[in-house]
Image 1 (cartoon, rainbow, N blue to C red):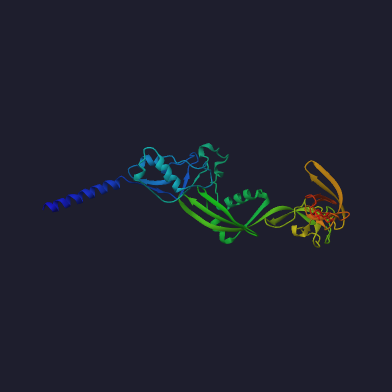
Image 2: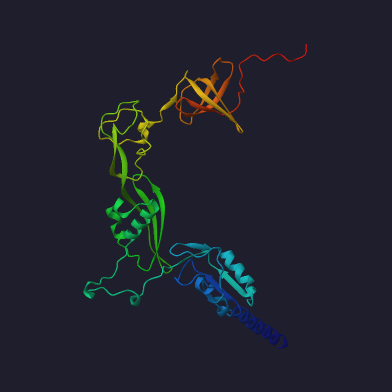
Length: 350
């Protein structure tokens, strides 16, 4: 009988202690995404997590310091380990009785919205319409800002299969856009968040034409001819963003690699830099060493365009040089002669 009573007392004591230990634990379950109001610059732990337990009120009011200021309209991330460390260092918190679960938290701050009281009423109230902000408008604004183009300089052509997604309202929601690729079509990854829920996660592809200045041939330009204002002009055309046209202003003075017909746009592949130094030509070479500059006449051993490094030799062919082409008939010597062809006297003792 005594033994039975002792066992019963031990079981009851163990059960009571276990219940007390469980009630003393505070559980912090981190949220995946958080959107803060426009007037809140930093989050409290209560904004970032669901908190249950004895230390709930103290933990909910704990200010979480961010590694960098929280931006408006874009997403930041704070790591779970950072949050745990700040809880551990917080005064008055028994960290040993806190269980933190979840993952890293992505958070943003919503843009300030105008209130109805702060907006002036329209002159004719019957014409008042609720503003509709769709995903299409958001994508177009984001793309124009990324490419630095104006609205009247861009034309978007979306696929029919994306029309329903593009009509999704983004009013009061957060839209995350990233560029995936760019060729004849732009490819964007789009995610729309509402509270902690993903409303839309989609890849959009669309054609984008931009009004661009291009150089167009006005007459037939034969191969190896020089581009000038006499045989070409600048026009504005609607083109894809990756169209490899030549820069209109920089095309002047360039040499064609093939025949270009009248009315054809001039592409970068149609042009090459002119040869400024011909093989065998005697050119003016300048050698610069510190504050000393020496000019001499040398003979080119190969042809070169602006910026090319070519081989040269002295006029008596006793020395060879390397030089960079600096202009028509002009080069700058890269280093002092190192490959002398003259015979050096034998200094070895007999």
